Image (cartoon, rainbow, N blue to C red; front, side, top):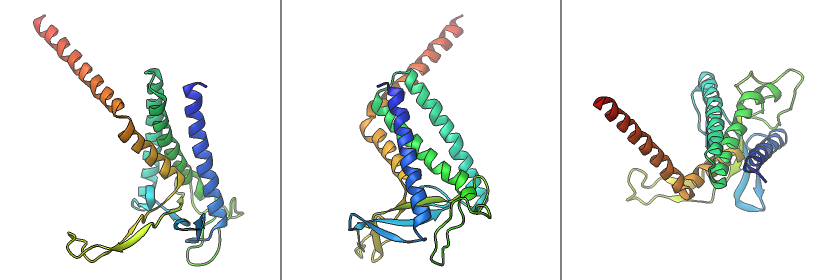
Length: 226
């Protein structure tokens, strides 16, 4: 199977699974509803929505959200262009798959931001109820105003920082606190894979920069001699 086919399949499968899970959560769970995963108390489905970035972080109201969505779209375009460049450079499949995970995750969250406000009704926050898809009165917002659906919650352990701990002594902590989705997980896996297992990739990038700089220096020397 061609590299391009494998990469395309990975992107499509991640996007499909991410969106299928979000649709199910959005139309089946009321806000903040929890369900244990495989009966494990530290692994849960916990439905929340956010207006901003990955892992429930936020970014400044409607204007900030639209700007963030536009930035995401531009970033996806750059990623697609760069992956095409990597294909031309005959990059390894592992590197291509790492970037494919990042791309798929970015697209998954863009779909929420771009379209969910137009196709879903608002999820009640202070009462029991679920969202409706394609409601008669229209969605809860406009293009690029959708909320990102999050559902994975892993409160593995909690405790209290010792009194001698700088700044946080005596404070309670919970690991892992953020709620995230499959798209966030794909982006994180792709980045971690690049940082931990693709050191040669960054070394090659540095070597390419060095070669370009050397070529420029030689050209300048020749021009000066002329």
